Amino acid sequence: MGVLASGRGSNFQSILDEIEKGRLRSEVRILITDNPGAYAIDRAKKNGIEALVIRPKEFSTKDDFYRTVTDELKKRNVELVVLAGFMRIVGAPLINAFPNRIMNIHPALLPSFPGLHAQKQAVDYGVKFSGCTVHFVDMGMDTGPIIIQAAVPVYESDTEETLSERILKLEHRIYPEAIRLFSENRLKVEGRIVKITGDTHADSFLVNPPVIV
Ligand code: GRF
Image (cartoon, rainbow, N blue to C red; front, side, top):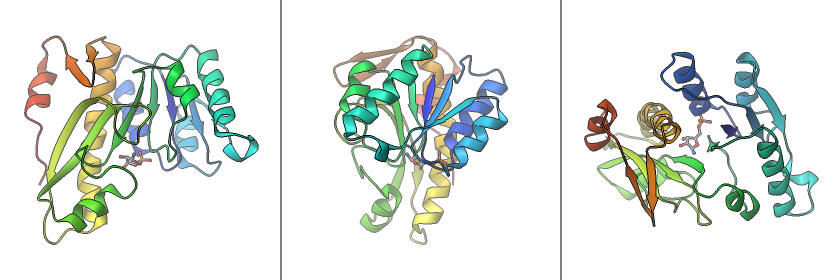
């Protein structure tokens, strides 16, 4: 896979940890970042993974930037593109080159609270549950077919920070899980419905996601 990240890269780390433990039989061929200060770069280096900084401002159009990103991924025979805190709307050249082969994780139960500051949106709205969603990426913002979701309670005392922390623990579980299902060729996309084939322990987790209090 190829990972795109803009910041601290804790989801990237959770994927690396699952590979390291032998629970995810997959390989990260490259980390691409738009931010030369991203801590994700350090994580890549510590794991012997190539890290490439591609700065959007060096391109005259958004499409040119995404054409270059796509070329770098293709050169390394990447089959799945994993967005791990990549803070940009993905452009058409990349989406068209990897149809239903780009995943994103969003810190809310989509279709509620798409876009930035999803956890703050949930707190401000007063929902009693929120969570996280792994989905394939399409041309919309956080609108693609949903692969896995997991829920957490939202308390009256919650702030954006406390809710983010609770959700992040589940992000680190469901993102590697979604990638594992992809790597085992168990995700079948029919329209906007993602069907999970096969039968393992994972399915009980998917049907009945744990609530972390
Ligand atoms: C996570 O909350 C993720 O859901 C969102 O961006 C954040 C990235 O965090 N897309 P990290 O860089 O993986 O720690």
